Length: 225
Image (cartoon, rainbow, N blue to C red; front, side, top):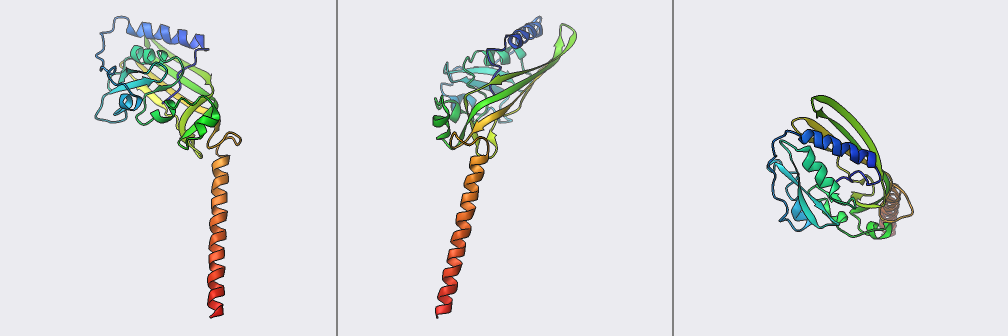
């Protein structure tokens, strides 16, 4: 799952709207899969990663709606952008298995990081690259936007598990990638993988100490016989 471009980037939204409109002019109406009957996030996104399923459904936590996003074999740019922009809070999920943290309701670091499968993203960036043909003209655009204070699935070493997403249609390619600049796991005081590394060091020290203690006890016991 990936955070959509934030609402405070009007120039980016305007660019997407213009490109979307141009791409759809004169295009045949694309066949879409009905995703609206899927009433839960995990049901909505189920099968999105499977090769046997051609379509992708997306879930928006704030509206509790499941929408058709795009067809893997012939994506429609307008449908995809409409699905992203219809979710106002950034909790847009289109990855199978990406629902737990997005639907947790966590709106602060402490609540989010109490779940070991979630990370709190204090600040990050999303880069969107568009390449396509608009009214006979080749167009290439790139935009970078910021996002903050989101609860995302991940772990203490790798951080948030953002997926790079690439969507291709007959006359366009849209790639979206995100990275977290500041994130926390397990607590809210130590940034990045530092806390997980600290736990690992403590575990190693304890194991070595226990092993040394057991070895000393066995040697002492053997010597007393």
